[in-house]
Image (cartoon, rainbow, N blue to C red; front, side):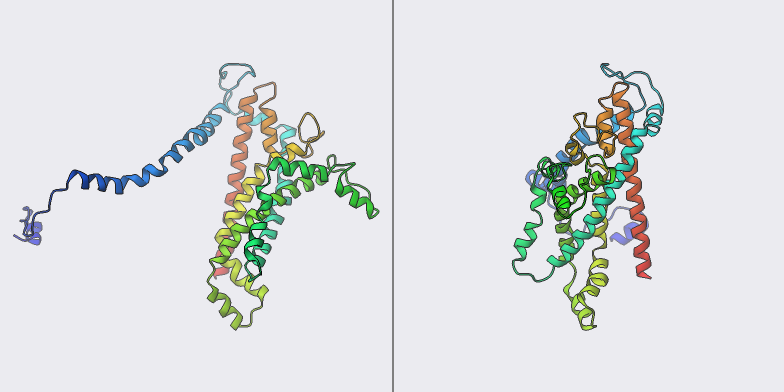
Length: 328
């Protein structure tokens, strides 16, 4: 009886070929190694991520619905959304929110634009391309604390080099630490200095993957370098640009080191009037406050998470809309 006849009648088919040899223990072990060993390789990462990433996030979300005395050994009774309400109605949180948005716009937007332009220049046949490409990454290897200290000295109100140059051309010095917009500009300059080269290399890697035939075809059609960049390069690297924008958004919403070290006030509250306190600084200061420090800090943390997710979704929708509009 053949296999087709066996399927029709429902009876087992007769094996006509040679019998399949039984696998030895070593062959079975080799098969198991081939199937399951890749999962074992990255399992330690996910276990560590669950332990130090997911668990603290989940516990902070749980903790945000309880009270907790500052020196208590355990959390108190549940308070519902009271901690979230306290944070959302706190005037300091409002200042920290707008400070973060302002620093984020002053840092992320110029940072992505400058990184894209520099990557476009490095994508051309320059002499010593490797040296130029590696040199843009040098600011990224400088420790954030060192960067903040250097720029803190440059933007010092009385003895800073920037104010000395401004006064040398006859203009009044800028109060970098007391003026709100000036402090945002100084902090955004630190962020741009450190992260522009990093984003440049990511965008450059995407540009290197664009087929050169597209540029040759555009050149044959008479397109200039600028038109090739705008109509060939940028559409081809759109997914990478979205990745860079999202990572810049996450970094901008979590900025802490630069404003913290820029603060010369011994209370480290982001200026005497909270003029450059960011959201992460607000979380840090709230966790050291007197009333329900940990639950309120956890509530503020989750509000930051929701804010980042909201901005990332908005960027995704805008990018997808622009992509569909370009494909029409």
